[in-house]
Image 1 (tube, rainbow over the protein chains, first blue to last red):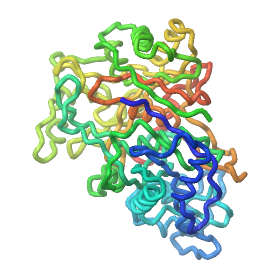
Image 2 (image 1 turned 90 degrees about the vertical axis):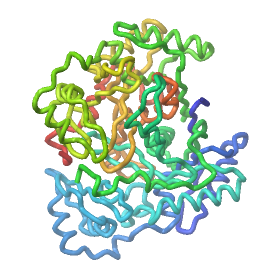
Image 3 (image 1 turned 45 degrees about the horizontal axis):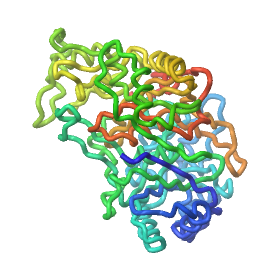
Image 4 (image 1 turned 180 degrees about the vertical axis):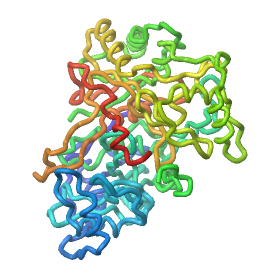
Length: 261
Length: 261
């Protein structure tokens, strides 16, 4: 097994709508790591915010008129001692949600239209160019990953995998971990079910969420305050495929199979 | 930022009760990577199973007499088309549990006596030496990590962090990710709350679960069928401390704060 290595790119400019992300990544990579170009089997992990920005997946709060449900939730979810939520921001969360899963103790957990269960439907303000602008998740992150992957191949000749990540909180545990919201060229799950372990017996339930582990690894390779949304991973070639594959949507548990609603 | 690198050890023998894990790791490391000894700031990530085995945290099914609740749950949790659970194994899960959180569709999710919410209370059969032997979680994984850390320092002189991991399923998402059940010498959470991001504004909710991300990274660096329970990580020195620190128990959300019960 090759050693796992992850390095971040630091030279990416502020991303605006219509930016050719793949070209910016290829250029930054060439400038920062001239001796280490992208190769077949590398993984390019991208924090979703720059994908959202490049796709114009942002919302100007000044254009939002909160409805009665947003006004009610903004009141309801105030934790003791904290500021009230902006009802317009709550309206954006509702617009991004197919279903509210929990709304209590200052937290709105919802299922997004994509099927992700997370806080505030992935709507985010930090790192935004303007405090009145919220960043929402890309409309179809697997399609974004496929597009960036195809373009990187066109520009560099390398058949890489592309992964788009976001930071999600977890039930039962403090803190957030990055998980995959989109991917292309990658097996998101490594299906060991029915295979045998080193001792020859079956590994019944072993089904590693490889894409999520890669997202978590990429997040460790960057310093959050230094704006390093892109990480290149090597040594994981066994999970990289020539085809785009099922995407991160394969990681979603169907609501009817979900024990925690 | 230094590049993140992770390498696994492949030369560890089968672990038995009373084994000096730290000594076995130090010896294997010297044999496999003679030019790259442990250094201050390295992280030694260990799959919990070998810690459990070294501590004798195993249960012989032949010594277990299932009670009425175990018999009932073994019946209740049979998924369509699947085999019934061994009521003795269910009894072991109950013995390891403080509270059953869900028991349906073939899955028992419980809160262990440590406070971990996971499937089957972390009780595991795979990789076990004997099909009648189940491996349970270490009694106090943070204490195990502290002991192994102190012994590694004694043997190698290096002040490393030690992390003990297990594979947990997640609510809402398919597959498992490794998470930290014990650690020493490591900040398990990187508290960015109240600090500002690159644009100078506050990062309200950013609170990366560093220890869990490290566990996930370590799992990517090994091949599951080749018995590589130990992974050495470099480039994460900023999370490593001279003191043992709060341990992985700091990652547990208190039941009364938990929205998903």
